[in-house]
Length: 601
Image (cartoon, rainbow, N blue to C red; front, side, top):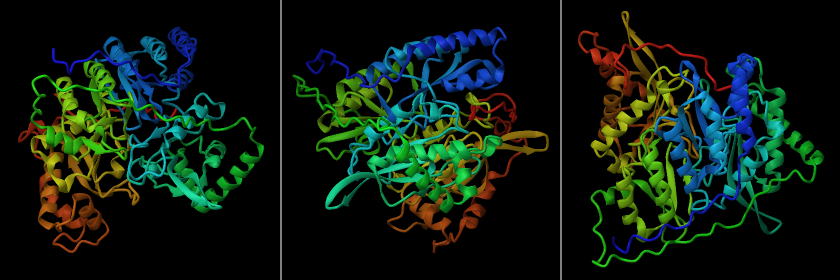
């Protein structure tokens, strides 16, 4: 054993206990009553969702347990507990969602309470991870370390999550309600949620004051909208008043009868932005005047303790750097604003991680993150922050041992794919598996090393409901079905040009692409881009220009792109290519059978 191996460092533990153990007991009792026929199905469904247990495809005997990670923060002992639970009650793996949750799939309904009880031991909860309530409050994984931020929004995200968790005003909303905090315009998708917030500092009476740029009424789904900025600057003391005002308006005026149109974005669209904005400002004045003085946002500004574990060089002069390190360093790490520190993003396959990898990751965090915790991200991944640059080669070696050292985390080669037909009642296609197939192929082609593709994205949903965020992708896809005669095949509606930065826009519909032709179509788009690009173009900037009608090459519009792609999407007969008619991950004929959705309680 080399002297690089040291005693295991003590774990940093969460300051906040999000759990209440009595909720596990209550869940167990309610399941028993439901099984005995003493609790009607609709009431039980609402109760189950409010406690973070989501329905599983075509069965009432299993659930998906969604574990909330407010602001994305997760600690080593929590990952070890989730690892244990995934082995004991789930399928031996866990899933990172796009909303900083960790999900355990295919849990027997009677075991959900056991998971809740165990999560409470490490301060975690699934409460209000589903249902018509304030969902997990998100915060960019780069908040606090981003060179472009004005201050760290993390304490405000955590305080907002604490205020609304189990709060009576947030228990029976017309539909789910989402907050996104971020660090800067580039990270955080603040314009496609109910309330999106970017930290700002403004000079007021000669002194700097903290506040936020707040966006309202955005969201993705069957009908997507980009959010509107409420005002030039919202001082930090008005953050909670604004949040309460917006929620009260939504609670009062949201459409409770039509489930398809009862997200806040529809209310904003139907009222018109000017009317909604005026109503929010008036409601905020009422809230400010009538709320008790004890109704405050308790943001903890105590700085994190940054404590690097000192490592001594090997007696033989150190270890050689493993193959692939330079590629991984380029595509998986970001320099922090703090000197000599990096944030390291893990490349996962469509958000999946095995129980053994979770357990290994807990030890890796203890040994390499100087803040002693990790942050889940917006793209089904996880970030280890405050990794000293001298420790990066050793960290890479440890990630190889854990099977977590794939490159490409911050590139187009790591697509988002929602759970799709692997577990979701509404899914029409196996978007989850398609994302993995794209990732494996593109890493094999080393597309993660292509500078022209680094800022582009691929996002895939198994239905129009946008859990895979396809509407804001450079290349987006949502699932459906196609038919040749009596034979059906998995099909995707393709959109292009979506983005979620300061120039947020929704993608433009291009054409329908059979599932087994998605990879060739993406490669063809890249080929066309390479032929027609200007020297400083990326795929993202080039497509943006095409979508907006500003391209002056042979490709003048999306119609030109579509014409080039159409020969690739012509379906063969089932006799010519039987595999074409099978969705990824399936050896039986394709169909579009769905169940009842549970996006709303």
